[in-house]
Image 1 (cartoon, each protein chain N blue to C red):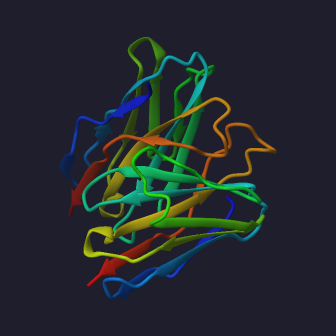
Image 2: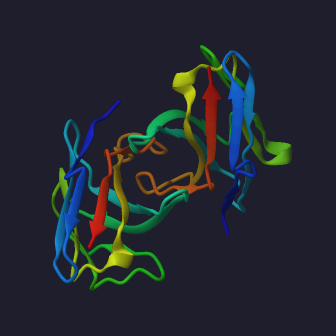
Length: 116
Length: 118
């Protein structure tokens, strides 16, 4: 069975603070994909990153960075110098390698509130 | 990224009526689309896989007769909530991906439809 756990339901920070969103996954597959999506109050899901299980290199994109550790089945997301516009619900998701065009298993989501 | 358009973005209907939600891939062909449901403050739960030219595949616990899915073309899938009741009120969101060209390609989501049944 596949499962994604985001233990942090809500996080509140003050602008310019760094914040890390945790994601732990379970799968018996040896090959799989991990994703992060952002859901602002308007509701649409915005794709942030995809990582395949072969590639454990960490990635940085501007203020965003991701730490993938296969040994601990974690795929954590850090926002550096947070901004009010980062306020949203963030979802971590898992799919099988041949993912049937995007069949995703989502975590429960972490609601991030960045206060000015 | 690819564009997926969902319509309407919100709808209010009376109990007992049916509502149709459209999901279109605007700049690519999608043989497979997915429908998710999201309750307030909760995660997205996959309802069904919509396959172009064939029957949809429903997840366990999803009523096929209540949530009718039609994928008549490579760019359009529709979800019809039949005989809607207040408990069907939710946020419905579709996704599509061009995984045939790129295995593991990310899914692109529509804007979502907020359904309120009164």
